[in-house]
Amino acid sequence: MTKKLLKTSGYISFVMAGAYLFSFMLIHLCIPYYYLVEEFYGYMPILLLAICSLLSAFGGIIFLQYIRLDDDDLNTKKNYIFSWSIVLILVCSISGVFALLAYLHLTEINKDNKLKYIEELKELEKLRKKGIITVEDFNKKKKKLLDI
Image 1 (cartoon, rainbow, N blue to C red):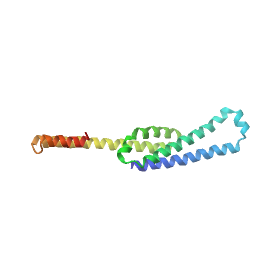
Image 2: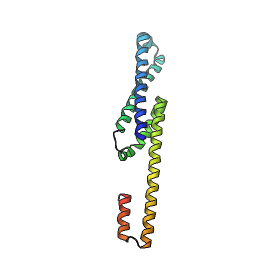
Image 3: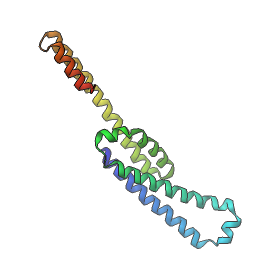
């Protein structure tokens, strides 16, 4: 689900980057160049379109690269996903919302995995106390669960 959300966010970012770039080019074709040079403050919104286009395209490239990662590597990029989702919320809201949903989904998966580790460790502790497994087996399985 996380990769689908990132893929959707990446494609929406590209579409928005194209729309921003099209608007930027259209404005340059329609407004005389001397007017743009003389009125710098009037040119600021046009520059903002260009910046939004670049940010949106770059965010789309990053998210489309992240969908190729496996789940563990994707989990290490969780903070980058959050940062770019905030940037994309400011630049193109829909894409940023999808990216933020992907981040929240990754966070939820991590919580579920942590709970599973705790429950498995508790179960192993009960088996050790009952004498079903030895202390050495308990320590081996504990190390395997915790990846120590």
